[in-house]
Image 1: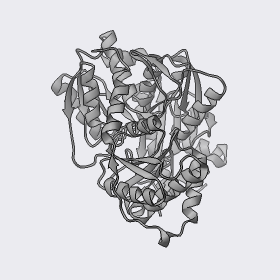
Image 2: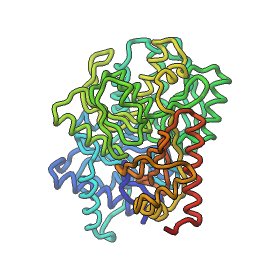
Image 3: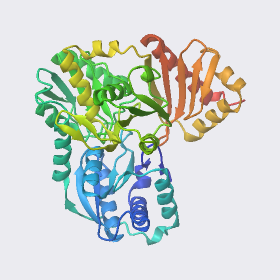
Image 4: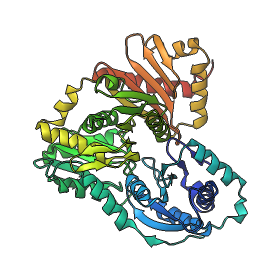
Amino acid sequence: MSLKFGTSGLRGLVVDLEGHASALYATAFARHLLGSGMAKAGDPVLVGRDFRPSSPGIAATCIGALARAGLMPLDCGALPTPALALQGLQIGAASLMVTGSHIPADRNGIKFYRPDGEIDKQDEARITAIAASLKWDEIDATPGAANDQSADAEALFIARNAAILPPKALSGLKVGVYQHSTTARDLLVTVLEGYGAETLPLGRSEDFVPVDTEAVSEETIGLLRNWAAKHALDAIVSADGDGDRPLVADETGEPLRGDLLGLIAANFLGAQVVVTPVTSNSGIEKAGSFRVVRTKVGSPFVIAGMMQALDEGASGVMGFEANGGLLTASEFSVASGRISPLPTRDSFLPVLAALYLAAERKRPLSEIVAGYGLPFAAADRLEHFPVETSAALMAHLGASRDNLAAFLAPIGPVAWTSETDGLRVSLADGRIIHFRPSGNAPEMRCYVEAETEDAAKALLQQGLALVKTWAAGGKSA
């Protein structure tokens, strides 16, 4: 079975998750909530989903299992994950989101939330152990139905986002909304038009489109560039499948890096502590007045870093990932007062912060991006890359400095390394290359930084080519 917890939730092939498996993990989640005292019999638990074809069926199976386990499921339909999480925090309810985020439609997953926010690694271990203790043939996978609470969840999320900027703050901007199959597609239009922006919905699809906001495909970039030129847009915005990772492109259709969006949002909020993974741009430390804490990749690690900062007495604590998903652990002052913490990935706040910067400065996004002077960063992935091959490569490179030096010899000599998450290498000339197997899909990711865009793109291609060559036949020590 392909199912396992990764950087954010349970993921696996649809054929492995449908039916008994989804009922099994929903039951294990319910028993964990009840056994730990985080919920009691009859308590509500919210269920949401994305638009991939398998999600309605998996959600119905989970609803049936949760009800039989003694909880009261409430159906929130297809909505962004941050909207589901916000509703759960508002009413003090656990929640479950059926989504595979950005991965292809033949895969899916489940994200779990306690009444106080995302589950952590200890929760994952407990849910996994309970699932392993249950007998497969005793699990009832009969689908269920639940009362609809989608309108309440959407209204709460819209109200939160309507309070972030001053009234009519985006007047004068013409913004394309790449709708594809993201659950954020209609709410993005509603929120942006509420601030006075002229919106142009683009590329709406009834078929699921896997959009990765961290490694934007050449096909997607081509669409963005064509739309930007054709419609004279100031920006194009979008999100991944479940609406927790933002995509913002400038007036030329060029996507902004997710960590830059996080940086813009951190400065917008006046953050004092920023928690972000090692894969985020190395120039962030010099680009704001906040303290930076680096973690492994994945929202559970970012959340743990934020909670530690709070425990140490810090205020103004937030985090973001290289994919742009923004998390807040503190209250922050905004145009209409203060917004409550939302310690799960959110795509809306970074979108609003970036557009507001362009509107306030009356300058194109491309000029604003250039003004940050960050090292040029790029990222991509090799899809359908076996997990076993990734593990073998990482073991080989980590076994000795000689192995690493020989592997990277076509690129350049090694200055220092970090194994916080994957293998991050600073080369003698200052360039950075980072190899990291995906935590929830058969993919090998590569992140790079260099002084120029061309140099970053060249390094990225070199790094991916080395991985391909090694996988094809260079596995000997």
